[in-house]
Image 1 (cartoon, one colour):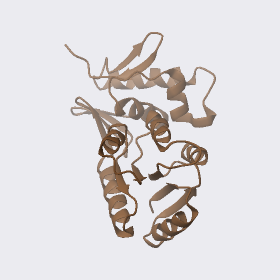
Image 2 (tube, helix red, strand yellow; image 1 turned 135 degrees about the vertical axis):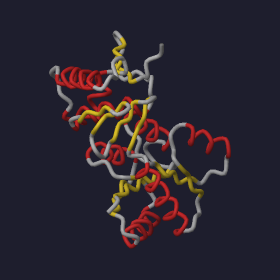
Image 3 (cartoon, one colour; image 1 turned 90 degrees about the vertical axis):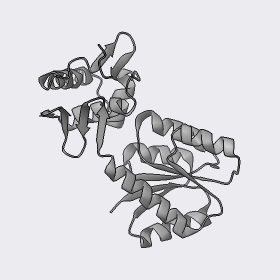
Length: 222
């Protein structure tokens, strides 16, 4: 059963949507404002987010930006705007789809189902010829493959979402451990193990250390 987090401050609309999602077989939860939405995303990540842009405390754009800094969860934006430029900007900033209010309930369900199908098809991530199989918990380069621990896989997947982007230590720790981020050298230990395992399959050089900034995953170039 897929889990959907609805971030919506309109109680009447939220009640209708929660009922609709429940009847369609989803496990739906409500966050009534942006702060509660961010807490729910951090403490118990869903499979998909339905995000209203017109929240009373935090702008939907800000929530989207914070979410995209650490996660690739599918996000369906609900918006009352008909401004094409803003909708294009939202898609470029990380929204996977948008739906204008008012909308038909069946269209909402259809868009959610389409996003979840796309998500299910994306259980593999690639950085050049290096492939991360998120379901099997393995990294593969050509015919060679190696098992990764859940933490190693989470770190690799985070870096692979945006190849070449440098992630700082605190950013990686927060994304992988959440509020329980370690203060010791646990992150460095996991990074060293990940680097060694990538070397086992001939993927030396993919995991980059950028002095003073952090780490990135990038296909080596000749």
